[in-house]
Image (cartoon, rainbow, N blue to C red; front, side, top):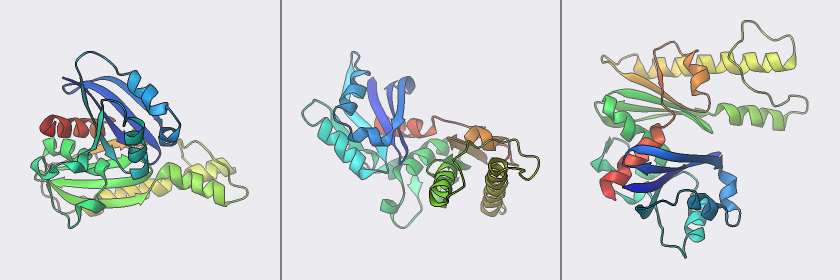
Length: 247
């Protein structure tokens, strides 16, 4: 079974071609490109192979982008769907009050993370999110400011502070502006992330996995005080499980 799935985020979108659970091809691009005329059709053409299912499934946190994809593919044979169309509680029990307030990316991350039974998933995206799965049940989470978006916002709202690339080597306070900024973000998020992990897990009397994903996962793996694993495919794996269950 060959099929197309994707994850539409606020900053970037990933679309993949899969066979069963194996990723055959993957394309990542800026979400804004979805609104360019003919762009999505060009992307889909890259995935055309024999025995390709016509249903395309997305996790999406940008409704306008999904709407535009549906519009772009309206006159084709493809049927564009979003994961919340389905009864996801068949795959994971979700212990929160309002499912509509929970991002689709966080749901599919937890669906994949459920295989560990107990885990904390940290996603370094436009926001930095912490999602908790205990005894196979999604229990909620924490949302903190995203690192890259915070750097961009600081640069855009100040006259003299530049954009810069975050690096993990910071042994002292800065002697210039970029080193001072790097120290602030590395040390600041070191404290934020490790403290949130501590607050969430301090009363856990169980073995659990900490799973990192997103742009700064590999950088902060070196900084987080607990043992962690990095899985940059966790979201796509979760969407794949939804696809295989319901389509």
